[in-house]
Structures are given as structure tokens and as C-alpha cells.
Image 1 (cartoon, rainbow, N blue to C red):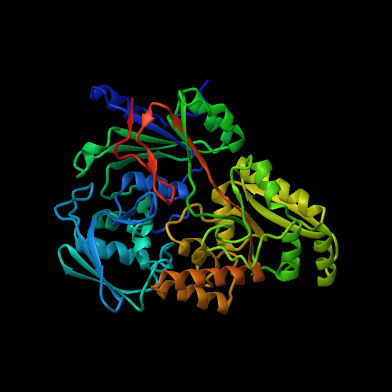
Image 2: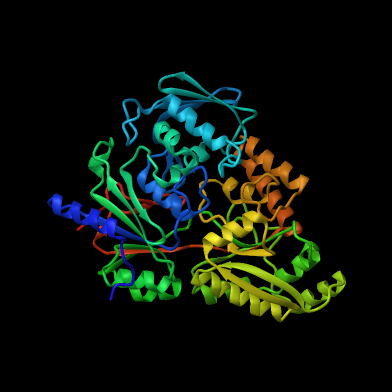
Length: 499
């Protein structure tokens, strides 16, 4: 029995590729969510970035240890003042529509990412100017030293689209993206599939074995696994950890675990009147939770319990604010101190993913034992994005950054008052100052100390309740070899083959 299907046009393309080329191969990857727009400037979804990184080479990249590596920028240097970054671009390359890749294209791409409304604008807000020095040299000027900037150019900001396609498509560029990279966009069937084909003109095309890539959208964890086991897909993301035993045979499957920096939290809407405006009530809700039990039951102990944006034991964790134990009686005492009527009504907006719902149900049961009347509003992920962008929610979760190549990604966007993902509208002058200083701190130890201090402020103010750090499992056929993940957790197919 087939549990998912390709759209007719995608099937036709795959069939044509297989019929037209001896030994041609299609790699089929199952995603857990339907991506939003395939546009690095507007996307807020990890799955969209997965597709874009498969298609496109970035300005810079990272290795498995998050070291910054060359990409379309072959070398770079900072000025002595730390306020000018010179980028030297690769020469003689074209976008997939034939438009030349040059300094003007990079200038346009970075300025597009800086524009109001961009999801990336906050990441690169320190940039004051992007100028063309010569056809293959770009000069970026920043208001003050920007410790996070190179990592941002190795992230979605570093995906540059063809200026001609941007001009033609405008805000709809995500429907037909054109970049430089091993694969070019073919088509998309909403909530079903996204199809790419290999670009033979790409400079490293010979290193990519697959003639086409088909991403299948399969939100249900058990159905995604069943598709792998039946041979309908070759690789799946985000295996339900409780099912790891069913793919434990190394002769049939290979499991990769992604340990990139990330966190999942419950985010409060601090711009909405109600009892959760009182930090004592938020603290009481935190004390109602047993995070380790959530990890053990929902994720078979594979994930890491969290109470800060960085994981316990890492260099960015604030040891002065250890993880509190569950204490329902202390929670009730705080609620009485706050003067609220019990039970306290509370609604959580939960993405309709099986594991997220499982976590939501555990949170509901735990908090209801401690004086809350917690209810779950379970809707599809795209709807949660819409509702939270509109401010139409009381709390949202479990949600949070699923990948990062720098600590800035885990906290600035969410907790800075200008952060692009600060949908809870948390505003703290102290937090803003600390996070701004992490960006201008060029000494790694000074920067680490500032992040730790910021973690302490968050632990006191409780704008979010951190729940756990994901360590998601990816599973592939054993004869799919050469696939690896970067330090921020994205698949790399250069050198991968299906034997």
C-alpha cells in the first residue's frame, strides 16, 4: 500500500528522467511539514530551508563543526576596525536562468534581505551599506563590529536569487526560485511534493549523482516511516524516537542524529491581556512541568530537557539558573499570591504534528494538576504561523529555532524587542542591550559571557518556557551512502550515491 503520492507532473518528470538517461536516479526525501515560500527572505520554516540548501549554493557554508567555509564567496577579510567586510566572489558563474553571477547580484540579494518585512532583516541589521567594488568584489559596511555576520552569510541570507527572476516574479519569487546550485526548481504540488532536477551547468555538477530530487510532504510520523519501509522514499526526517527500534538493522537502514543548536519552547503572547501577563503566573506554569518526563515519554529519552536557549552542559548555559524540579504545590502558592481565580484558564496553540500534540497533552495534564485549566488548540503548522503573526494566540508551542550555526539565531530573533520571530512581543531594555552587545563583541569569551547573562534575564522574566532541545533522527536506506549533515543540521548530497 502506498501512503503518499507524487503529483502527476512530478511523476511525469521523474519518468522522463528515468527513461531518457541510462542509470538516471531520483532521490526521494520525506519532509515532516509543507514548506512555506521557497524564498530565503520570507521563509520561517525549516523545511523550506532544507529545500533551498539542496538547490542552492550559499555565499558561505559551514562544516560539521560549524566552521565557516567558502562558497560563492571564495575569500573574505575584515578591515582593522572590524567595520568593513570585503567579499571576493567566484568568477564566471551564471544563475540557472543564465543571468550572470556578479557583485551587483550579491548587492541586490543582501539588500533584499535587509528590506523591511524580511525574516532576515534582524539577522543583518548591523549592515549600513553594501557596495560594489568591482564586478567580483563586494564591500559590506557595518555600524560596529558584527560577530554574527559571517554565520548569517552562511545561512539563508547567503542564498542569492537571480536578479532577473526577482524582477520578473517580485514577491512571488518563492513560487519559482532561481539560484546557483546543483539542482534547479521544476515544480511544486501543494501539500504533496516539490521536484528538483540536476543542473548540468553547475560548477560541481559532476559531484552530484542524482538527476532529480523529489521532496514528499508527509506530516504524519508513522506514515513517513511506513513510506521508508515500503521503499516509496529513500530518506525521512524526524523519525519518532519511539520507533527507532524498527529501523535498527544496519543492513537495511542508516540512522543519523542531528545535534545542531536548537530549542523548543512555549511562547507566551505578552501583548494580550490575561493572567499570563503576571510573571508569577508564568513561573507557576513552569513549576507545573516535569521536562525530563516529557523527554522520556514523548521522545524515548533521545532529546535533552531544557530550561534555557542553550543546552545544559554547553558553554552558553547559565549554571546560576538550573532547571527547576516540578512542584505543583509551589505553583499553586504562586497562583494564590498572584490573586488569580483557580483554575486559571489557558489555551496553547499547538502545531498539528503527532509529537508536538503528544507534548501538548503532557503539558495539559501536568498543568491542570497545578491549578490551571489548560486547553489545546491544535491546527496545522501554516495556520499557527498566520495566527501568531497576527497576535491571535495566548501561547504557542512547542515551537522554536530548529537549527542554528550561531547562538545569535537561538535568542536574538525570539527575545530581542525587534526580533523577527518575537511574536510574543517581549520587550526588555536589559535584554536588548545584552543581545546588541553580543553582536559587537569580537572576543569570543566576552560574547559567551553576554549570552550567559542574557540567559539569566530570560530565566527571570520567563517570556518563554524552554522545554527541550531536539536531537532529531534521520533515517535512510542503507545503500544510500555519502549523505552527511552540516553542523546546523542540514543534509548535504555532494558525493552521495544510491547503490
